[in-house]
Amino acid sequence: MKRISRDDVINAISGADDVTIAKIIGTGATVDELAEAKAWLANDEPLINDLRPLAHGRARDLVDILSEFEENGDEDTDSNLAPKAS
Image (cartoon, rainbow, N blue to C red):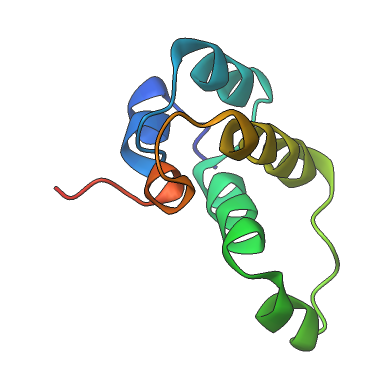
């Protein structure tokens, strides 16, 4: 599995600052784990209804980091976690 690179984080999280990017990369998470964390943050109800276990491990760490980023976000929360257009 591919670990997250700086470019992956920048493409996935609009407006991420260098500290947030470093925290995310520092988890050692994969691109799939970042996508899972973003899915939990976007709307956890469908995941719970699908009987998926709550995020754990690195995905849980990413949820915590992204939640903190949302709380401290300088921009609109929804746009911070939206993927950038290619």
